[in-house]
Image (cartoon, rainbow, N blue to C red; front, top):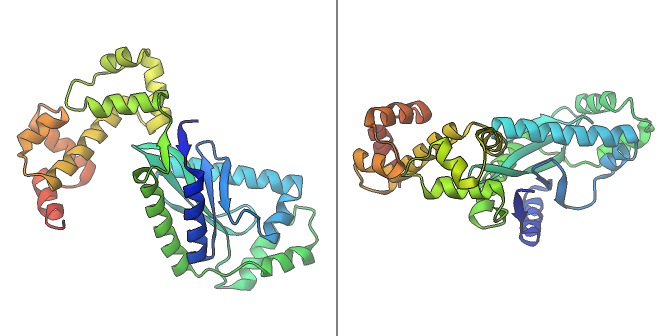
Length: 281
């Protein structure tokens, strides 16, 4: 496990989220296994589905698929679950490392209740559940209009990003991802060749590549570029440093290269980015 979660504080967050939205929230670890939820008890509909071996497996596979997709796209996703309900998931990142996921589950929009029920009934037809019991449980689920769901997803995304800042989620001290992240961050203005990072962490090139892919979803050189541009964005909006001084602080000696990479990653030139976003502060 790459992260430590403050479950006591997280539970307060999930409870508050439920009080505001009426939606059940779940925290998954990096492997897609649920570690905390509020309310803890599943709604009757999901209890019926999970009471069958096929439904239980369907739930697990659905959760893990959603986690994989959120990891790949690195954004909040709204999707239909295997049992005909709607769910939303967003990744939890700590210093660029995805360490878990926040999920909103068991959602019915209610815009066309009959059509939504027919879809759920059809998807659950292969599970040995009496249709009358399934329908009664389905009717007990609260309705969440799409506008409310979208607002809840915005809150979910903001909450996930805030977990690192308030230390509800952090990398395990001394773990390889934590050591890699700390070394790169502390030496951003210096040479960060693969050879130097390998020597500092005691890794071979293949192991470093695999660690970077697993931790950041890209090669180490690409991650270093991303981190340098992210730091440049902070310096452009938060300081009066010149572009040359910023290049020096982020370890890029060639200004023309910095200009090209910055524009490719942000869609702005450094000067345009400073004008646009420094003025908004």
